[in-house]
Amino acid sequence: MEHELLAFIWAGLIAFAVLVYVILDGFDLGLGILFPFAEDDRERDVMMNSVAPVWDGNETWLILGGGGLFAVFPLAYAVVMPALYMPILLMLLGLVFRGVAFEYRWRAPVHRRHIWDAAFFGGSLVATLCQGIALGALVRGIEIEGRGYAGGWWDWLSWFSVLTGVALVTGYALLGATWLVMKTDGPLNDRMRRYAWPLAVGTLGFIGLVSLATPFQEPEYFRRWFSLPGSLFTVLVPVLLLGCALALFRGLSGGRDGTPFLASLGLFVISFIGIGISFYPMIVPPSLTIEEAAAPESSLWFALVGAAVLIPIILAYTAYAYWVFRGKVDPEEGYH
Image (cartoon, rainbow, N blue to C red; front, top):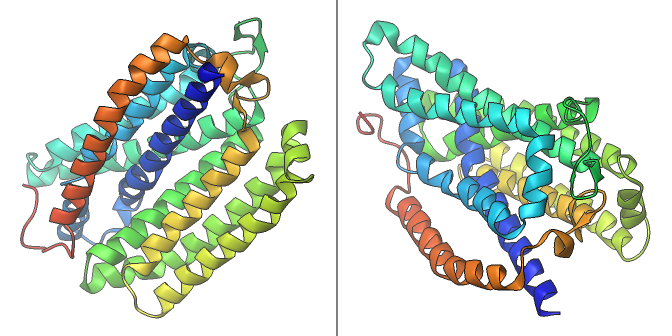
């Protein structure tokens, strides 16, 4: 019983780390996707300066989620990695290109900045697309035989995983646009507010398409969503999404700067909860449960003690960084 409880505590911690990564790194990946739509180098400078103090700290949560999976759910890690090797590798390469471009762009001669601008955009786009594809492949289910991956090299690629990849690109672009609405003034603010409208409509449309398709990817999903008590969530989740959508559109039309970003984050949080409802108690659909994949009890306790120390520290310095750099970006100051 104690092993089962520890396994579910750790599943919650990893899910929390992944969610925090999505809502924090999502907007700065979205900002990179929107990079080509800036008018000039000055606007691109402002866009980068808006995330310069926090972008690398945001990726801490990806390391925490991946490292936690390796440490406390080694069987799940051993199955997921070979199944999703290609999208995960491409995602990491995209993040590397993006990080290098962030640093080198400021030091490159003006006539060569376009190279790093393209790398920043390309890295952000590839990383986001691959995250979405990996999510779609995981939702579709991973074939397991014994204690190992039994599928093929290209099993991760399907119409559903491509759909989730494009959906995530659209959603992150919405987060990036609403972040810039919150952090900037003037023409850049106005343009991103205009871009946020079609991105919001597209994001809601993709949420609808993915939600309709998900129950048909695995019989257990269908049963969970359309029989009690899961059907209660089937009604509740769309209502919550509608509330966030109304807040988003009212914020955009009413000239509010912070509300659209918070409402966009709400869309992601609710969608994440919906995925969690579909998965539970599985950690690797359709057959590997949280308890089956967990490490021995002693390992779970050892890792939990470390997490109890580290997670509050990471939360504290993340909150402090956002507090210190709150407010609008000054176009005359920033990362150089």
